[in-house]
Length: 181
Image (cartoon, rainbow, N blue to C red):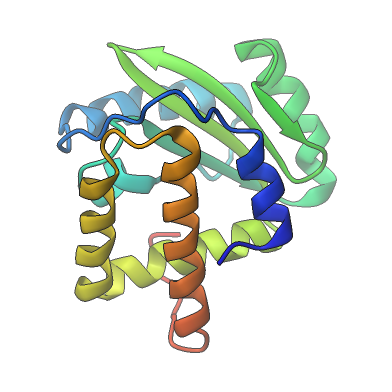
C-alpha cells in the first residue's frame, strides 16, 4: 500500500514507457568512481554514496544511483554548485531532494542531492541497510526486479514502493545502521 504522497508522485510518472531490467554490469563501479571524483573536486569534503541495484550488484535498470546527503542548511548552496556544473536538475523538491542526470560510457547516472534530515533519506538508508543484512529480503527484491521487466514506469514504481513500505513496516526496530552509509 502506498502513502498519499507516494500515490501523488507515482501519478506523475509515465504510464506508457516500459522499464527494462538488465543484469548487473561490473563496469558501473568504474563509472561511479569517475563521477565521484568529479563531484569531490567540485564540492570538496562531501559524502558521496553509491546506492541502488548497481551498488548491491544485482539486476536493475542498469543506472547508477549516486547520493549526496547534506544537512538542510547546506542544501541550497550545494544545489547551486551542482546546477552550475551539471545544468538544471530534472526535478527539485525544495529543501528535500534534487535530481540530476549524467551519462558516462553509455551508463546513466542519477545524482541525488538529499536533505539527510528528511524521512525520505532516513527510510532510504533503513531500506538499503536491511537488504544488505537480510539475504531473504534481498532475494525477494531481486525477484520483484525480475518480474518488473516490461512493466510501465508507473507499474514498476508502484511495485517497488509497495515492497519498500512492507520492508520498512516489518523491519521497524530490526534495522541497524550499516557502516556503508
